Amino acid sequence: MPRLLIAVPVTALLVTSSAFAQTAAPPAPTAKSAPTPPAPPSPMKLAAERTQAALKQVPPGRPTDVTSVEDVVTALYDVISGPAGKARDWQRFRSLFYPGAQMASVQRPRPDGRPGVAPVTPEDYVTWGEEYFKAHGFFERETHRQVSGYGDLVNVLSAYEIRTSPEAAPLVRGVNNIQLSFDGQRWWVLHISWTDEKAAGAPVPTAFTRK
Image 1 (cartoon, helix red, strand yellow):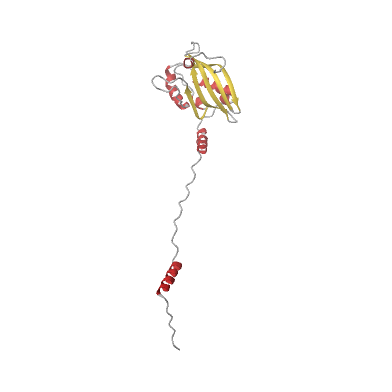
Image 2 (cartoon, rainbow, N blue to C red):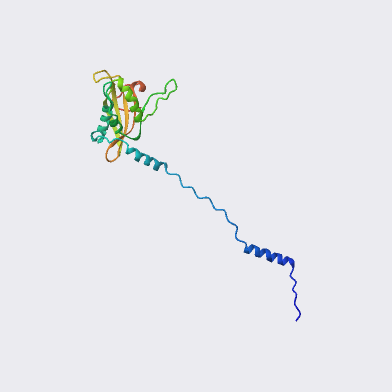
């Protein structure tokens, strides 16, 4: 029998070869997306962790110093008062303050540009007091107070007088603003700020109101 010759156009062969090559070729690799970075830790969580660690470093408070609002205020005045040269019980002082507590003298800005209010830590006060009380008698006494609060948060406005000895005339009269908190077991000092009659430009009142 005669052979049959089938003519196939060259273009058809090229198209078929191209299609085969596309089918047989492995897929090209796809770029992987970058991993999502973890969310930054919550500032509140970090603060809680720092506070928990700091609480372990606070000296234990005397039960007679931290059981009531009256106890804490009395201890604050007692622990810093004494004659010149008498070492203060700074561990007792530290035991009254919650971690992160601050203290501040409230004055008007100075003519030289220094701020009137410059918060310090209780530890700053210890550093200052260790030197100051070596050469100066210092007796701070409460004259009257006004207490207000809500829940476990209490604010005490406590009028004070400062003398160089218990028998001396007052050198300074003023008011301490003491913020306290109860944690279910004891009271803590969160903040103390104070001002005096010279800064306020008026005598300490018997009732603390500001009009």
